[in-house]
Length: 270
Image (tube, rainbow, N blue to C red):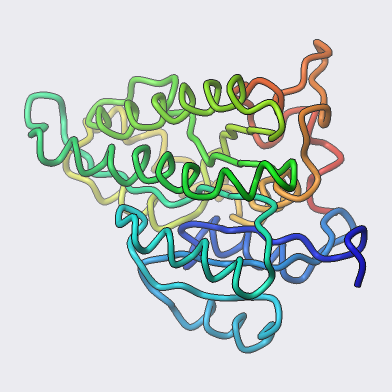
């Protein structure tokens, strides 16, 4: 297989469930929009669905069980890609947590933990993989959140961590002119995190009402919808495509965009 047709290699964090698992699946199987790709999945756990994918795609998936906040585990994931395929074309930085507590109860320890998982870990992973991404003129996809520009009560650490992620993405896009950087809001998705929010005793009732209503009315997004766009950006996005209505390219400046923006219409699941 020559360089022009060789499958791309994508390192995905948090690939064990929810959006991350669907990103891994989309990349491995391919779709009308996404060419089949190779994946290294770094995640804390290896549930049955991820293990099944590893059995179905033994030549294209390597699962590294580890903690994204441990630099040595991120190194293991990077090295697994290089040992197996000799390249890293893209990162999808999806791992994240939401620990709900109002500002009045937010200790330094709890705040730092969320920041470490949601923001610091991705900066470490980027630093470790940058030499390879530069070689491939690669892509970094940051799975952000509407919380980055929101003010939900009891979400101070999550809101702040996602806002910091967006700022980091913009800075990376400015510094690294040979790679594309996308920061993407995936919408309100039917994941374990949403179940955690509905069960929380920390959020005021009026704030939680929105999420309860979306769940009861069946309006939560299936994970595959935003996951397909995120996976497509990883292997097809660049500093020149897709393009916003304004003519600007989010991949060139790390602009915060939504998964269903018009610019991503051609990347959505068929």
